[in-house]
Length: 312
Image (cartoon, rainbow, N blue to C red; front, side):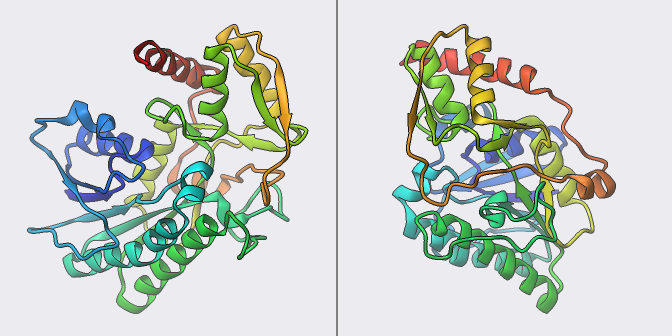
């Protein structure tokens, strides 16, 4: 198959390109490099099955030739990035998603949207299930990301219902692994960067808020399975092992050997207090669940971050 991937130079996007190519597909990657990195795709330079185009999907564009699949991963995804680029985040989730759907419609291709667990906001249902409509502040500082993804889900379903586009929607929970940016702002790179520098780990609030962490290879396997499924409604993809941020900090200390102190800062506005996926739907429909333990995944990620520090 020939598959167009927006956000191809991002953390998850670049890993998905690797998987698609490994499965024998050809890939046209799109990215405007607002938050993506050319370095994430440097290893694909010269690959016969891969072509990279610098393209902002908010702007008009065309892809020549047949297209069998369209995957939309384009969006700032970390709080640091979407708070720096709130308007761009809203535009790529709305106009950008619309253009990618138009491409799928024009080419008769299937379409996969990567959405987010942030659609649940500060959840009233725990663990989070796909039937939960969410508890989201539509005018808070994080709304640029939350609402862009909620709109993206809505327009995706509209194209399916109105035009019969074969759509899939993945709600991605916290994912980590190699190719995350040092200054990403999310807890995994933030803690690892601080630990490897011997600096205090910054914990927001009391550290009692919970998260669950899925290694990127597992997440990409879920995306791959979902994009060839017939499920049209959202599917959670994440690791159901829930832990507090303080517990996660202790794990980072253990793996890095750091003895950094922990400093506490005020909790950001609208930061969700609990986050953990119910993946019963993914298990039943896709035969998918995470295989890589947190310990194994973090060891691989620590190795990658040590390499980054060695070059800085």
